[in-house]
Image (cartoon, rainbow, N blue to C red; front, side, top):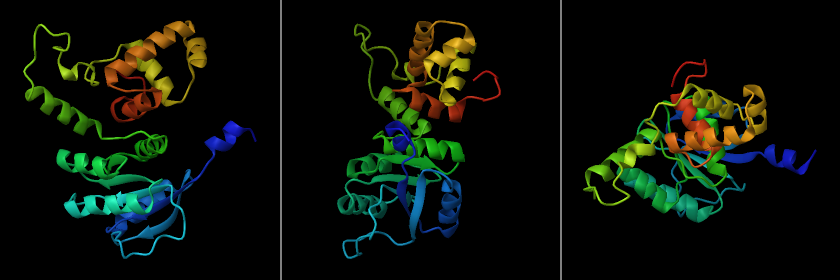
Length: 236
């Protein structure tokens, strides 16, 4: 096995901390046969008195319902006890103030329970690469709040609306087709050959796609597409 293959097949030791037993059972089923190997399930909150885990977890998935100051404290304690582990909070909904506090104390991602299995796995993979992931709806809400609180300076090059590149534009048919290719993990060379165009053309389209959906890289764009783009060839 090559070094790259070995790296790609790495398993992440995952610990579930859920007060809701149905949520923990559901997460365990969703993560079965993935790189996220559930090694422990707990229902209690971490505390300074709680013994450290015997394992070295790579990832904590924490029940975030309801969002509260106690949960923020729990995230802070988990990060203090396991500084190298990633922390993802799962809940039905999030409010902006909680997400801001959660990020400040060490949370790496926030996942809505309304998403599907593919969204969850992609989000966890992004978090393990060091990305901070927040639901798109919440990002748009925060950007909208920033826009409403800022009077644009018409003489400034920054006067363009903040939501201009936040994924609200419709993609062209070709861009949508290439974005579906990104969802499948296809490299530019494969996309160019299938569409009978040059790799340079594909790169231009990818750059435009990233700008339109507000993504920093191809993986983030694929995650966005999972939520917003039909995989059946229809328009976004």
